[in-house]
Image 1 (tube, rainbow, N blue to C red):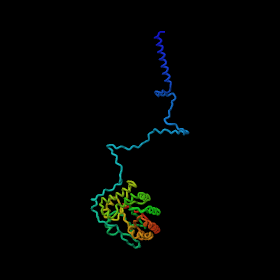
Image 2 (cartoon, helix red, strand yellow; image 1 turned 60 degrees about the horizontal axis):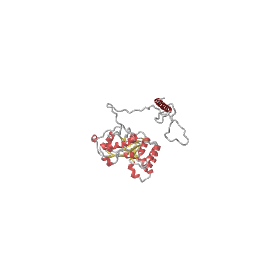
Image 3 (cartoon, rainbow, N blue to C red; image 1 turned 30 degrees about the horizontal axis):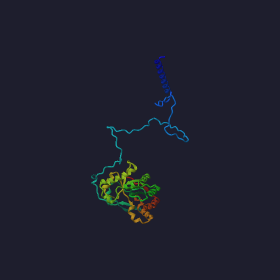
Length: 341
């Protein structure tokens, strides 16, 4: 054999060996260099976390979440031709715009609300509005019940709350026990400091009235505009508790003139005057017993058409426990003050 032939055969053998090696590698299910996996061969899964070395816990298969997309209500986007209104803000109920110039024609002479006592043919005590006060309020939307306006023996109970003395909750319990509904006239500060009590009043069927700005000296300084601002400030606190669709409709003040009462009327309030107030007897009875005070309540407030004004301090509450029971025994009905319009 020639040398050249020998070399050719040798090269062919080497080529054949290389081809055999290539085929051997292709038969392996996993190429360690390329990581190519034969889908028909076995696959080794290498764990990515350390296996649990204790007793294996049962495997609970969790179904795959549904791929269906839930319905979502989309918020419409405003277009140049169709603008989206701004969210409603306080107050949702429209109050009229009060200006000083709109009320200059009304009298600015101040007075306190006062009444005179009168005894009828039936010897029943009753209150009548003093003539000078009647002149101021003659054209005002107000509530003042009298024996002549009632067809049955009735008492209208109201409370004026500037501060909390710790007896409002007990007073509400007392009223609830006798199923009596009352009007609670409150200030902005009272609502701010006693929101839970105010919520309870409304929840139990009582009416929340607007006290506005208090204090004779403060009221003397009020213009029509600042007076209206004081009423709205109370309304704002009230709406924080009950929503922007709620408002007050009853208003009480002690010191007033025709101009301010006309502002209150323009804002939709009915003014509630009282025929008896505990405040006038506070100094007289603060050191006497609750029984003595209850007797006085009976003489001054237990008659037909009474619109009483009480507070919630200790002595008044204790006297009311006795007084209300006496009224029930006498057949007196307790009614809730209503607005005129």
